[in-house]
Length: 164
Image (cartoon, rainbow, N blue to C red; front, side, top):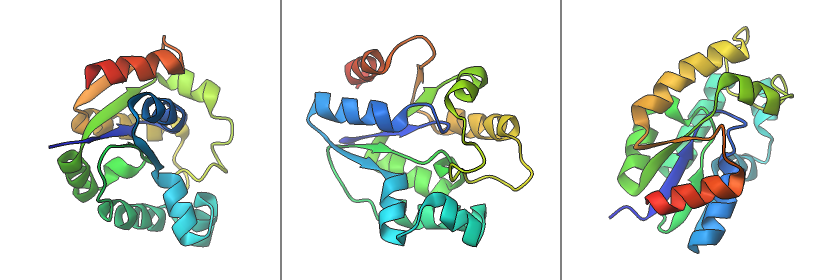
């Protein structure tokens, strides 16, 4: 039985913030996989990218997430988790996948550090190109899609909690 919820979506969609509220409301544990990677690698995501590349960061992310064996947790993933079919199958086995859908315009308003945030993207890829590329993958893997454009974080957490 699936006892976890996994939040997927673009950087700036609110996965970590909503995840913390949701975990508190439901009495679940909370894991931010970006923080998990940084703890285990002893580096920021941007340092990993700067020292190697975005593909290496995705590989590290895949390895960390495949190790997850938890119950009753909210999992806030990095935005690039959807590039690994293996990880997404694993997360689908252990959790319900919830896509936090935010328009490109709203994401742009929230993200001001695109070049230094540690986003796993190709060197010359624009934020809009990344959004379009990932959006298709989020749609592919989502079991539940939540429109996050018109509700505040508490309202979103309440809405997600009522759906599952």
